[in-house]
Length: 343
Length: 179
Image (cartoon, rainbow over all chains, first blue to last red):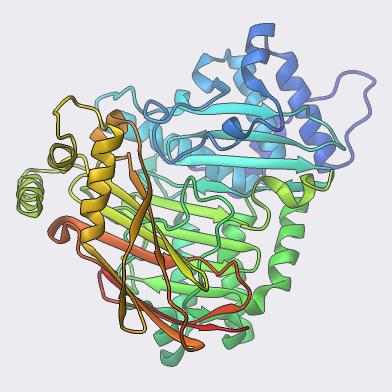
């Protein structure tokens, strides 16, 4: 199911629910997300609504996410497999409203990868698109903070909505297989994350590469699930030692995560990241090239004052380029606590 | 236990191993240090791969009841600490166990559950420029290591450089302690 960005935009637009007769169209992204949330909730029966809604301050549910399959780490909320077709459409409409077209497409490609994994393992019930869960913490509102979670194997999208803000940290974005064929076309859900980082690395001069490339193996995520709010001492090459073109390439890599959330929230987030760019570090560990059309097998980390991105290929008995875990964090604002704590 | 762990890993490597969602033949040991003026705290997360779990479990589960009791975890933590060394300015420091917890045996069986150790060591006063070395020799033949330190909570402490061996089993941190 490879979809172009235009197709994804059309699909996302089609999924965002139409308004009831006489209702004024939502003018803001948050308004559209809230409308989509209400459409989704109104499509559920009372028992389902009870199952999908949590208190906003439910710390256990907030942190109930993982890279692991749901059979190993159960998620809260409603599974996509438990929904009727109409309910599923409304659920996807909510997700499409909260994310950018490309972000929505990426999430769909990750979910479809799990379906490919299931098929490759003789229908292993541990995997598949039905095992992705949606939950809502708090009451969908244009003013008061609330949170939308969508996740399952290799995916944890956590969006805190607080007024005009859409805060995507922490989110785990992974894929296995990270390269598959659908409708005769190759799909790489995290292909840009790999290609753009390789392009940045290639744009560095030898002296910069010496700083950026770590002399040791990094076998896994350092700040994966369960490591909220932590900041490790940064390493690698500082963006202040990059030229303008290189900094542009770095921002391009970062945008692959920051741009998953809807456009206005992503723009605000990129402004914040740009403000701290001089203090942002890029570190690489592993091979410095990749087979064209394949993902890099190397680990990399981007770390700034309000940002941690980790890209960590996983060997686990196979080709690491086909099994990727990535983490996107703001240690100062995981789950939007900078915004919501003030309330 | 190292030889048995290595043998278990070899068996896995000799077998055909399709891509798996789980850690198989590696024993991931991730250490995060928190550096304070008078104390260093080490949080060590030990995740045995699925193929290594039976051997790791056998080494901890002394009464063979299939569960990890508090005394068994404490005893295991102390054995792990014997394989670690920590020094500041060339002076060896004694790490003591603060706590030990473990994921469920079911999670560990599939290579996704961790044993979490917390240890601390007191650091004698010294010159402002300090040099820390942490080494992890636990289950060397089958382990992969991560070693990092948190940005110090005390603003008077500043990390000036970090260095590691290729496998991260040796970690060096230079830091400055201000007033």
